[in-house]
Amino acid sequence: MATSTAEPTRRDMLYIATGAATAVATGAAIWPFIAQMNPDASTLALSSTELDIGAIPEGQIVTVKWRGKPVFVRHRTKKEIEEAENVQLSQLPDPQADSARVKKPEWLVVIGICTHLGCIPLGHQGAYDGWFCPCHGSVYDTSGRIRQGPAPRNLDVPDYAFLTDTKIKIG
Amino acid sequence: MSGPSTYVPKSAIGRWFESRLPVMGLMHSSFVVYPTPKNLNYWWTFGAILSFMLVAQIVTGVVLAMHYTPNTGLAFDSVEHIMRDVNWGWMIRYLHSNGASMFFLAVYIHIARGMYYGSYKAPREILWILGVVIFLLMMATAFMGYVLPWGQMSFWGATVITNLFTAIPFVGDAITTWLWGGYSVDNPTLNRFFSLHYLLPFMIVGVVGLHVWALHVVGQNNPAGVDIKDVEKDSVPFTPHATMKDSVGIALFLMLYCWFVFFVPNYLGDPDNYIVANPMLTPPHIVPEWYFLPFYAILRAIPSKLGGVIFMFGAIVMLVLLPWLDTSRVRSAVYRPVFKILFWVFIACVVGLGYLGSQPPEGGAVLAARILTAYYFIHFLVLLPLLGLFETPKPVPASIADAVLHGGAAEPAKA
Ligand code: HEM
Ligand code: FES
Image (cartoon, rainbow over all chains, first blue to last red; front, side, top):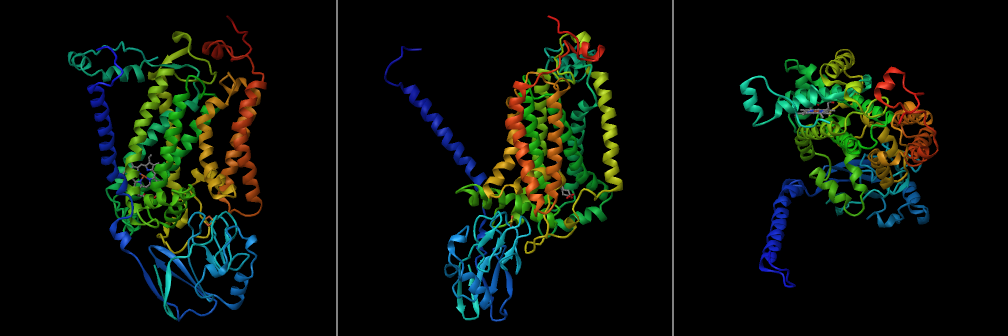
């Protein structure tokens, strides 16, 4: 070994460059093996679902499948709308006004997956007459907002649009 | 303890081979002349029982994989096809599904044995932690195996458990989507679970190899909790003594296993899993297999999503930390009067959690689960560290030979 100099030698430089290149190459080689597990092109292609809501009577909930998940479309009654609108936001674990969750007050469209661990809540059940999740007891109101139990968030509202008065497109 | 082998093959071919790859010598020193404490009781046969169960799961599993189809449209029917059409298919499937339960029964007894006799204490910490790693791999394997028949419990169990990852702040949703390969549990999920369900048991085989290696470096613990001091007086050779005793243990265990397989093959399973998976309908009451129930009860006892997940995994972290949480220098509960009581209270606590995990989370069950969850952690984090400081142990025998010949305690410790 030569005497130690303050200047790094050409050999040190080569060691570092080789080590760095190996690390980058290893990372680049591993990446495809991780990324292959993400949703594939055919899964991503399942984009939107259309639904004729004209046939849903007041008070009923219809469940449709969108991207492999259930979506609840609820034709709310006057009483249900009032209950949803007249809640003090400060009483809610995840405060959100009903008006921010609907496009037309009669129609509530939410993803039917409990925000706790993914079960499908049962409609017209629980203390607030919205939904009740049988898995660990989360209770949602007529706006799909969490009121009691372990779920952290309100039921999610998907992207949707009214194509006509009786037809919606989800996604 | 296994030191350099003194094994000399009898034949010339044997000697030629041994000088190139000393594998026979390794077997000889590990499983023939290896000194085992002479006071081992039947609780020490569970290691051999576990090895047997691992092989049984692999053999039955590889055979099932010859007839099973990992596709959401075909999986359920292919399992029914195994049950009805494949020669002996019903038996092989029942051996595999009940085998998983028997495997867990054995591992819980094996862990409890270690806790009672203090087998996790120095110098066996690494040995113990490798055991916890095996336990984790077993849980992952069994969880993914249970998804394969694609029944209602398969699907909803998979949904609830994979959703645990959504509790992770910021990246939780991305991780869960990555695990699923989609936006819900679906065909990509089933496919990868099958692939991993095939892989993990072989990783378990690898870790078992390390576990046995670590065991043979530090030597076996025993009911007296004192090390072998005089190989002549304190130990007997592995073969025939341990080999034969282990065989008896395996035979007795097989009787229980066969009773389940041939008389009550569906007793431990959930009838809902004979209904094909329906992603649009959650069964009214989701319960995991019995061996996950205590952890499931802890998950549900905490009234916060992230908190529940943290405590559930924390329950296993307690096992990893156990060698350092127990501050007593005496290993065996035989000489620790207070610890012995706490051990049984702890076992009752875990069994109680298991029962509560099977009940719907309503009313008194929730409160009881919270109390027992608190106790579980208090046992590890408060009672064990303090007990080592305040408990007065009974006198420990000077050697294994002493423990055997004079019934253990009361021997004045000699210099
Ligand atoms: C650590 C060892 C193993 C454990 C604990 C285990 C556990 C399980 C469990 C709990 C099931 C669900 C049984 C049911 O309810 O029907 C299952 C199914 C299955 N396992 Fe395993 N397994 C193990 C090893 C293996 C291996 C090595 C293979 C080889 C490929 C395998 C292949 C299968 C197949 C094809 C199924 C689906 C058929 C069925 O559901 O009966 N397993 N496993
Ligand atoms: S999944 Fe709905 S309460 Fe847990």
